[in-house]
Image 1 (cartoon, helix red, strand yellow):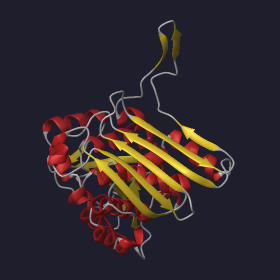
Image 2 (image 1 turned 30 degrees about the vertical axis):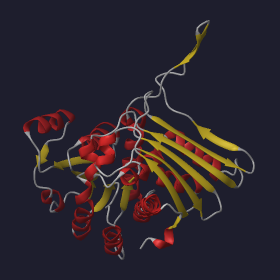
Image 3 (image 1 turned 90 degrees about the horizontal axis):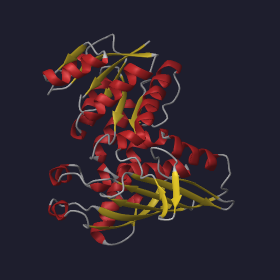
Length: 336
């Protein structure tokens, strides 16, 4: 039985706590830490069955009974807590991004060298049943040589401008999932990025120094071309689609809906809107990624999303931001 601790009791920390307590039988959640732990949060965690709640995350790192930690705290703490956890001999599951600072991610990579510790990054969309099916079709050779990848990712509503001012920008807090997905679906690295962006949803996001709409073109090391389109607001719900086109055909997936009902009548043809929120769409994937992390510890096998997989999307995001600012294609080799 693998013993786990969670650092950070916000939304994603609670999601992982729920998954572990209700769906992962080979692990137990011993402690959750959050510096802002209050009576309401503690009561909600107790209701899940978590008995040990604390404000001091070092209690988790210093607990010899805890094998691994899930870092679900604010992004600016991910890398430093990762380094502390590695020094304490704990396996680590870290939410994305490991850091907005490329040098800090490389520092974590260096600290992992020579250890037998597992370090997994939380790109949960790799574990979504839709995207897994596309990846399988590509891996099985069903689409042949990959020529074009198209990814659509649009949120149902924009974040508050205050969030945009501190998130690192849309490329780092939103498109980072799509940068990872391009690598996952093609099994290839990005070599060049060209980004166009605009403020078409909320002028206050622009005043905060960010964009809310983007189209990014990418060249892959295997020769494939990829296009990502993003928007902070899709009036009809959470829009998450992907297509891989190749020499033998194509594989594509559409949005999940509450049902597959299509109603045809004299007034038209009507179908369900996509699920509205990311937790509705991806809850099962959050459970599966933690299950795979626990399995990697149990079986001493590689994690499915390693520290390099955590680094590459941040490099791509940096290249995209430079491309947006300089109005030119940017090679990933330019990002140091």
